[in-house]
Image (spheres, rainbow, N blue to C red):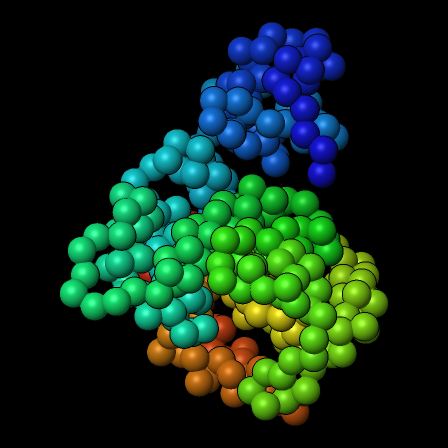
Length: 296
């Protein structure tokens, strides 16, 4: 996606730069993001409609997340999501950081004292995962694309020890065959075609159901397109697609890991295992929404 400056978009829309900046800060321009002190606006962004009425409070979870993200709100649902999704998704994949350490990195951008040793990759991937969550919130209103999926992987694995390996493709598909849970996955030379087919079928449907989102996740994990990081990228996509389609999202907790893996393996025979696991996780997320008084 190409981005242009506030100056350029103001000329294009024939309005003041101040108005454009206000639109960006109020999340009225999907995909706009701030880097340092400069707003970057998607080149194809549509001009927001002016309203004489006082704007209502955000109505959806996605609206609230975008508002809290832009305002850097502490202690809200955005803050909660960053810590819970990052901790649990990384822990499923073997991270040894504690929940408190994850929270400390998000809140202070520091590690904190510890008596034991810490894996540098765990720290880097935790910080990177926070950025990935920002990406899914920012890009949730756009169709899911191959480019976006690769960008998630690029962000997640940048700066890790894997990224320094000649055979490890960061932000691109695997170069060597891999397995998941002892099961064969799609050969490297077939991955690009299989992902394109999967996205074509998925994006052909306008409004997605929870079952369709889970089904996409199972297919994505079966392809296992990247050398590493497939689970975390896949779960980020699931969360994004729930936000995009007005479905209450969910976080697969570390203590649900075995049920989650069983559901993935049995999906073709029995969809109930994984569906029930996701619904149980959804019920837990609803408790977060109830606490923060967010409707669903």
